Image: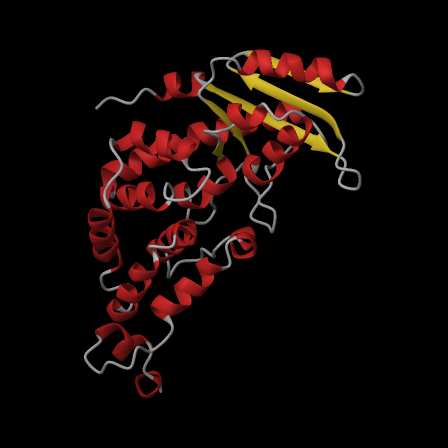
Length: 277
């Protein structure tokens, strides 16, 4: 299977909104599609939204940094038709900890509570929209490398990130990178192999059993990503712990809680107070 990143990106429209946090009024936005850009600032919102619909026509994906919990809801609030246009949105904020789990992470993304882009100018939606496309291009390249070096990790992320709502865009991206979505048995097998010797096997089985709840997919993906680089100077991004608190709980459950089984090699070595002394 040959994946053409440029072709994939050509079917994306990157969007960034400026919204008054007190009134929720949309007062500026930008959309970038290839070399074309649409910038709106000020009054006359309705004609600007008409132009935004036009630039999005025929696109497969709306892209943005925090688009799922910020930009898209505000767009839909101003014009309901954007719910359909954003049905396969791709959020670069959500993907970043998976593509770049190791410090210094991605140079365009702040490692703070909000995970914002590193912008050079204040309130410049066009620049932010272009930066989001650059981040997505770098994420695609990182996932392509991961598919060559650790294909089981890419398989696991494909499964974990595409089980809940708002998954169509992520599903299209991972399917373009590696093919059809894996089944649950294949994904669980990959996770077991990835965490072998890195977590408690007994508690891992408990965790896999809870993945039937689709809400645990992204937290498990973030936990898996962090554990893959644990032991260095990397930390789970603070915004992940805020928006996906289960991720930190899963890590503690898998690595820091003694299962009580004397035959467990991980807990016998890592969670044994006598051995620690």
